[in-house]
Structure formats: structure tokens, C-alpha cells
Image 1 (cartoon, rainbow, N blue to C red):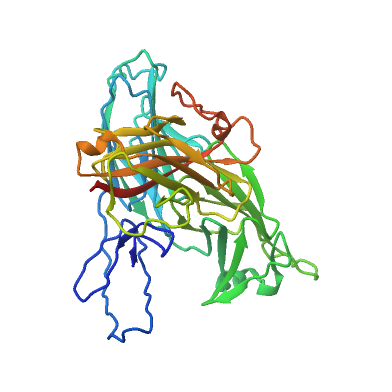
Image 2 (spheres, rainbow, N blue to C red; image 1 turned 90 degrees about the vertical axis):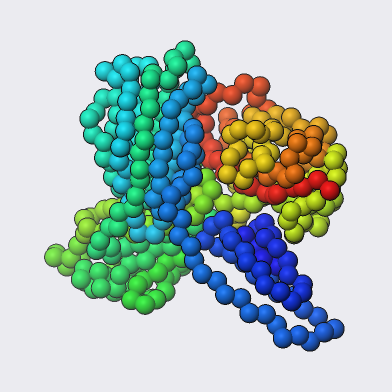
Length: 448
């Protein structure tokens, strides 16, 4: 079995049972292979070769989206229906984001009262404002971490303020990193250069985090702490548009502090925002206190099952179904945090894997069911949602469709939250809501 991600938890790209040559492409930087055999036939096994392909540009986004490619382009011309759009850029390993607006035009740009285009140093709601283009002539922006956001906002009675723009983003590689912080779905990982510690007069035995029982390892010249979000006295907090996990790293010695030695005190913060995992390097500048903030992305999967018992997942795609056949789906958040809750905000079917804005069919919209025969099923975990519906008439027009669902991640017993609101008949963004959004895709589904 070949999976588009880790084996068992990802969409199956194919299954090989006989002699032959096959080629598969992953949609991300992870692909899994699972081999099974028995004692009936002894064969010669298999040989596979793999190579990496670099994606140069992101797919253009019409009104907002999450961009995780190393470099890409954002362009926009508003419609009467577009009142709020967010583009979130998240680059990986060791980089910052450089954003340059090659084109920008806006009628009545003297003030930002009607429409505005803003750039934030991180996520859209909880990060410092780098600038509003209707108030500044600056067209280049650089983030302080691995993420940056562009937010377009316009009043409902305005046709977009005559705003059009085109921007390109690319990575910047920071130099002289001595401390790294990596944010993953279930844990953070911090590394400190041994040379850096020695230059400050510290040894590995003097470095601690909140829980002194959680001790580091020395790997290739780096002191490495593996810090689970649910252990090591890691603090958790719901922010404006992130769920943050915080710990502290400090030096402690029994002997009196030498006067010329710098005090080491670092705040470690992972802010989880939406649907992928990223990491970044941080340069420690020997000041008394620093805050290391990195942005990670929640990860989830969407899986078809063959029956309402949700025991046998569909492992091979395309998934061939009959018209009006009952379909069963499970959306799961990949986390060990039992205090998180998952909610299905929107689920859309499209014949185009790369376009979920045109020629679409809503199964769930704003938490409300739209598909014939829609029903929900019990799940033993709050991080998992099960639902079903009938293979819809949309399949009569197209040979195959893909499903993309927007999932919302909330803190359990947090009110009000998007998860507690359920179905809402009108869509209006609540800028104060404390939840994260995750996009997952499954398919294709084909009619027999």
C-alpha cells in the first residue's frame, strides 16, 4: 500500500499486488509504504526508487487561504460578495517571510475607513500589525518568524473600494542561529548549541525547563529538549486565533552567579494555527530574557468507511460508489490533547482537486447539513467526528469528485466558541472567536 502521508492515517494512493511498474506522487513532503506478506508464496520482493520534487509556486488563491510552499504569489480583485479575506503564509525550516507587493491600487486610499489591506507579523488576529497599505507607501515586509498574514477587509455596502493587488513572498534564511524551536502536533522541540552554552559559561547539567524531571539529550553538538504539550508543566492557553503551548528554559546553578556571565532565560511558545507542521530557527542574542514564538499547524485526516460501524476504512482510491449509496466519513484531529474538540464547519464536493470555489456542491455549510440523507454518528473521542450522507446527484454530472472539509478546533468547555454554536444560518466572521481551522481532503469518489 502506498499512502499520501504516514501509513494507515492517510489517503491511499494505490495498492500493488502483481508484477509491474507504478509511479506515485504525494501532495506533501511525506509518503508512506506498507508491505504485507504471508507464507503462501515466496517472491523476490520489491524495489522502489524515490526522489524529491520542489514546488516553485503556490496555486493562486481567490479570497484567502493557507500558503505553505516555500515561495508563492497572491493576487486579488474583489467582488461584491468579498468582504473579508485572509491569506496566511507559513514557510518552514529556518526561514522568515519576505513579502513584496508588486502591484497595489485602491480608490479613496487616503483613509482605511471603507476598505483596508493589512499585513500582520504572524497570524491574523493575535500578531503585531506591520502596516496597512492604504496608509503607507511601504511595499516590502519581513516577518520575525516563519509566518505572515495579509488581511483584506471591506464594508458590506462597499464594492471592494477599487482594490486590486499582487504580491510575492519568498523565504529569508536567518544566520547565526544558536537556539532552535520546532512546533509539532503533540510536542515542541528546542535545541541549544553546545558552543553557545560554553560561550556563556554553562554546562548541560545547569539547563532546565519548567519540570526538572524532563531532561535533555545531547545530539550532534546540540542540547535537545523534547517537550510534550501535555507534560513537563507545559501551559496551554486559547489565544485570538491560536491555541498556544508555553514552557520556560533557564539556567540554574548552586554556585554564586559569576558577574560576567549572561543570565539565560527563554520563554518557549508554540502557537498552533490550522493544518500543517512547521519549524523555525531563532537567534538568541544573550539578553536576559527572550521569548521564542513559533507557529505550527494542526493536522487532521478525513477517511471514508465502508459501513456505519466505522471499522473498515476505505484504503484504495478512486472509491467507486453507486448513485444514492450511503457514504460514511470520519474526520479526526491528530493530537494527544484530550481537551480539544473537533467540529465540521464546511464540507464541499468538487470535480477539481485544486478548485473548491467554483462548480461545487455543499454537503455541510456553516455547520448545517445540505446533502440528502445526512446524519451524524456517535464517536468516543471529542477529537473525532463521524457523519454520513447519500451519494448525491452531483455525481451524475461528473465522473469523479473530491471532498474538502473545513474543521474547527476548539478548547473543550470553552464558551462561546464556534464548536458550541452548531449550525448558523448566516455566515459572518466573528473576529473574537477562539478556534482554529483545519482543511482536509478525501477522494476521488467515482460512480460505478
